[in-house]
Image 1 (tube, rainbow, N blue to C red):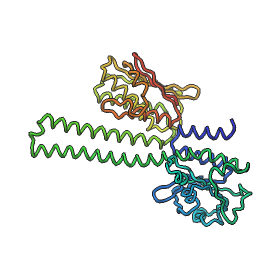
Image 2 (image 1 turned 180 degrees about the horizontal axis):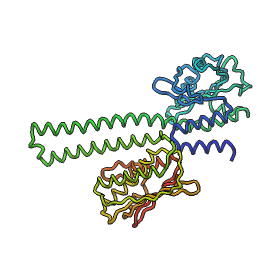
Image 3 (image 1 turned 90 degrees about the vertical axis):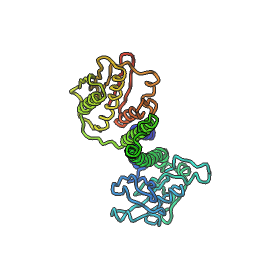
Image 4 (image 1 turned 60 degrees about the horizontal axis):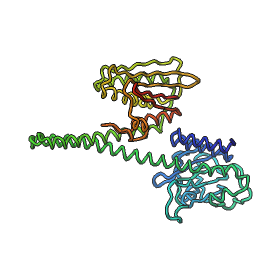
Length: 408
């Protein structure tokens, strides 16, 4: 495998296992390296402005540039621009002044959007942002850019001579950057919308209670009507279910912003076991036992303890609900941890009756295994948390119970 293939493989792995922010940062680092650049940045549209979203210079992140800048020209016109910045009027040199430095040669590339217009004339102008790479040397000596920029399409860039081989590799990673930017934008928009929806649903619950109080004062006999009682119960159930779904979704979006710190997995499991036992007790499962066997060899590693606690609790909560619902005799959940060949393994199992095949086959698919009163996101969240930790999860189920194995 040559270096180009390794770079692409690294980007793909980060796309699958990391948050979009981490993936984009990794992409930028790779692009700076393969192109031989001295630095670089990814800019994207935020509201009316074009901002630095990622950069090897941390102080640049969050700064805005005008749309008539080099980055703005790449985004709006869909052109690759190679220029000697000090002689280009579109270079926003206010940034150089802030950083007490000087930009020499700059390559500004449009990041094509993953969306495509049906209008062929508009396809070239639909771009998600710009990638800018900085060079101390002239990487295209055949072009004289001392008195003016050279502009061309990405396709034309790929036909240039061997000195641009590293730059050509950059274009292979641009679609991944476009995808990452789109996920970031979608997540931010959906988070804001769902957060507002959650607030509205909480408000709706209050208004239903106010309605019941008003009826009690004005026409108490109406509350004795079975049809009206059923209508009020259905309204409360719908609002409660919607609010629970909103909360679960908000939890789901937070997964992509993990906070890794030195954590012992056994401590996470101990907290998870206590939470599962408390949940069972509060829901009619006082007799349910939560047994644990933790390997003292488990090392301290960089983990997001809060997210993993949520992941393990989701598994245990589902098991506890099934054991209680089916009235399993001597119900029990066991949690074990082991450490072997530098890998931590957690097994969570129950002594229930197992799951139907149609449920087991769709455990980690959002909304596929929704139970009465549930949101259908619990185990989807669990799997994504494990994915973010670069781990694996599998489930085995049968008449003697269900077992989840998590490897980290």
